[in-house]
Image 1 (cartoon, rainbow, N blue to C red):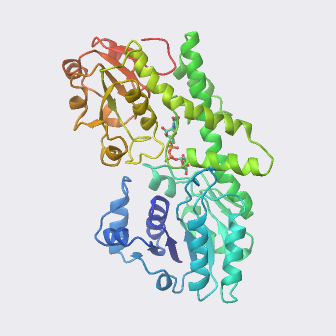
Image 2 (image 1 turned 90 degrees about the vertical axis):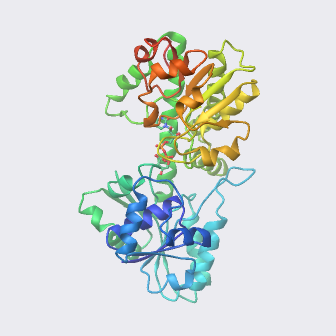
Image 3 (image 1 turned 30 degrees about the horizontal axis):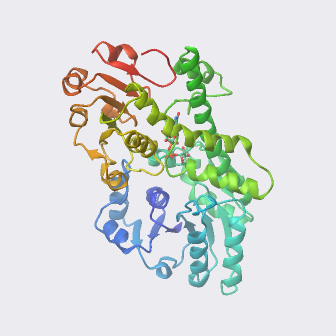
Length: 436
Ligand code: UDX
């Protein structure tokens, strides 16, 4: 199949590279010439494990190309995927669809044959209808098919998620779109990945419902964690105890500082707004959004509390800034609110993150960036693990004990067992347990 992927952001680049790896002929289009130049030079603008090799091998096999020229990229394509951003609209939290509709307008003008146009960007229910209207009203009398094919990629694990998906969701209104999408994903059917073919609006809804459910699951366990602390129970055993029930499932029950990232915060907000507009308030999602927002600052206060509720002039070492490991993404990272809370309390903050410091530094100019865990911990009154990078899972506590001023470890990701830390003379404060 000949595929054009519009947008070389996270989703577009991973999807384009994976489609080409399936053997399709893929051309990725982006208006940003610096991105395309970088890709031509073999540089990947995002941090995603394995993506550089995947891009390089498919470029050299001649199956993956990059361009800024939309019109020539559309030459003979069977399918065009729209994978541009849908950020939260300033002021009201609705998804900003201006980039998606601008692409639809351009496609209407530039497509000289009938094709299947698919939205991969996360878009509110009904967006596909509008894309179809634009294409077919302004498209030289051609009738294009419009489908929805949401992605469920986790940053840091995106290639694996793409190639071994739990499911593929295809939302279509006609047979042509279904046929083309099934053909594109045929290599995965051979791996028996379940395919759910449904109507377009339903596919759009599935994406939001999935993310809202996962965000709710995390928020649920985070609130249970707070209660565990209050009553003297252990949230990790509670998570295991409920997760072994197949109806609940073990995944996404790790209590932590609150969810962040490019999807959950934006998508929960957009879903909430759509629901309010239709007079169908989603009270559970609203509560999730509010609880998660409050949680981030409360995690900052937890660190202040570890300092005897007086952080003024104290030195806090933050380990991990990105919203999760294996990414350099700082979008809606809990670290942003945590650091701000600490600065507000008068603390001096020093941070170390294996990949995120370059992006984080301008977002938190008052924070000193250190070049290692131990440099960050030098003279610290408290060390706090905010992101569970592998590099923090086997800390040399002997060395850490020599570096810090006070031996206090706040572990917001529960990556240690208390005795591993306390035997080195550290006070250990975790999430959802009263044991210290
Ligand atoms: C998510 C969805 O998983 C993915 O399907 C969708 O396409 C995009 O959004 P991503 O944002 O990359 O992917 O990260 P994910 O691994 O899902 O984590 C999201 C946030 O939840 C992170 O801040 C993470 O730390 C937090 N989280 C996750 C928890 O706090 N506890 C958990 O048990 C799981």
